Image (tube, rainbow, N blue to C red):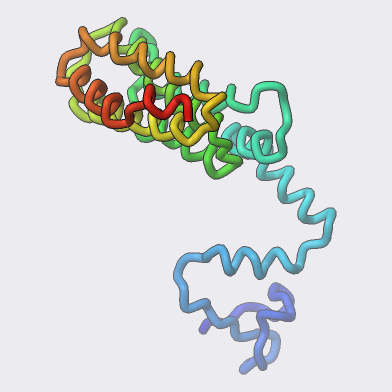
Length: 210
């Protein structure tokens, strides 16, 4: 508990003041606020206040803008900002000194999943990740085991996403996933073998006509 001038505190946070002109404010037991705290605070907002809060969040970052556009179904290409982020981090311009970040590239897909997570959008982004990664590997030489491991895992996720789609929607995606296996021949690090193993384990040709 600590003391602050009474005029600076909202009525809901006050208890009986021990000294005139001051109030006692009780700190929450939780050091960091949680969603429960935010939800409670939002109860004091009216419609205009909530709209202003969302507007501030919208202007705060491009990630927030992409999230809201996807959630609300706005724009002709809701995947474009997520693809741009994937491309930036998994296939950077090394001449400009841009760093690689597998985690940030994967975060773009996770952000889309939180925003709306449509199955065809998840399939598109996971395949796009792999395509951009192979394009990067074909243009330069890197020796980063974690990069290759992440690529193999994303290829597996691509197959899972495509397999979850209705049969009529799988063909184009499967063609792209299949082509990635041939692009792995010159990569090394056992990538081609791993991709072939994942492909045959998923047996997409057998399930395509289901």
